[in-house]
Length: 623
Image (cartoon, rainbow, N blue to C red):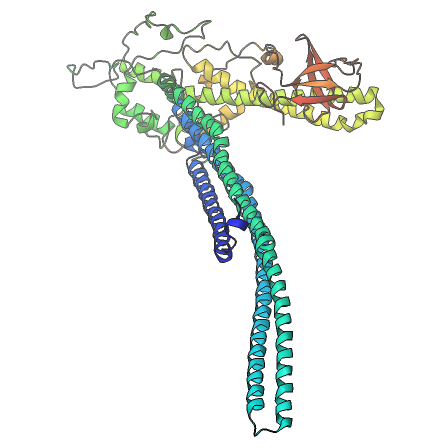
């Protein structure tokens, strides 16, 4: 089957068909372009949606992110963001792999089609020119034959007429001979042109046109094949992202399965537990006694003289703000509840935390006035009552004191413990950096060609100063933490890991006491003499890091050069040896490796070629 033989006379129809084929390809390119725009817009909308509902930093939502349901929702948002990224990949691949390629193909097809049809039109013009020459030669031969016939007839009439002179007859005969000669010449030209035309026509319809039409057929078939390949690529682009989209959906499913209602309930307890004991029973007040009141054990009032003295001592004080957590009309029920100082820290868990454990002994009923005085001097008490409203140490309303004294005891303990943990992590980072620089300095001292030891000396001094500052901060916060834990009932203080900072906490406490005593707003005041100093036996600071788990393997390495490993902390390697990498280069030029799960140490990073496993878990990241 060939267009050249089957469609030799369909030049115009083939021209229209090939133009339609290119338009189909352009239509498909436009379709892919709009699909890519839809994908990129969809991805953009998904990213904006995910960003809109992401947890804002330093906001209430960040506190809520500790619940498993909120964590699952955040994971869903992150997976949705990754899901949007796959749609961006689809758009990019369609643009680069289909649109750009087919646009180039269309341009090539247009140029090729134009060249083929230009050649075809040129061949048609040539055969038409030959046909016109044949027609012209034929008409001239026909005209000459007719004129020769008329000249012969005129000569015969002249020759038969007796009245015509002999000269006229001879002239008519010569004219007839001339016409016959011209007819014979025209006949020869016509025959020659006819033969030439037949040859050109044979070449046109059996050689030139079939060749041109065959090229057009090949071009059209190539266009159809490229369209088929593009459709296959179109499907393959979508199929490539399906596994990743599946992983995104699996991540959402896994996060949904990780939601734990019990754990969230416990988180609520940890977040809002104040650490105060609930009020006890209300004492019975007997009003059957005499209406004349004296200084008795069941009266809240005092003699007028005493009242005057009391008011003279504390001018401007209002008794309506004694208790910061309840309303004024509930004060009496609180004051009459049984209250006792907290027991000393036990060596084990509090009996109240054990189910069916022994109950606390009931307190005997005391006179109401004694109960009021007991409430005023009882432990545990808030470090600064006024701090619950506007904070201590000169902080304005809305600001957070450094020692978190504006929080209830339990929440304050958690914040202080969190601050201590953060400082310990910072100290460990500084220590790791100091150790790395020390090793680098030792290497420079033994191998001066590798570097100048004095270049790291100043940095080591700065790191040492930073460590000392951080340790002072840790001691300060641990002092506040020990103070809070000493006041909380049934709190196990066995987790204290370093010496408490005692002397530096005295000044802030005294400032808070003075601030309370001089407060004109009627807040409850405490006496400094009632503060209890808490001391805990100091322990070694580095005990926090004694029980470190072995580092996980994050890749492998190949020794490019031998290394002796004579310094402490280094390890010797042989050229070509394969070892495990357990810690990346932190910028100091050393990499930590392991041999046979037992021997490990540092080697220069330039001495090895590292192959990290990107999917490895447990690798440490240092800043």
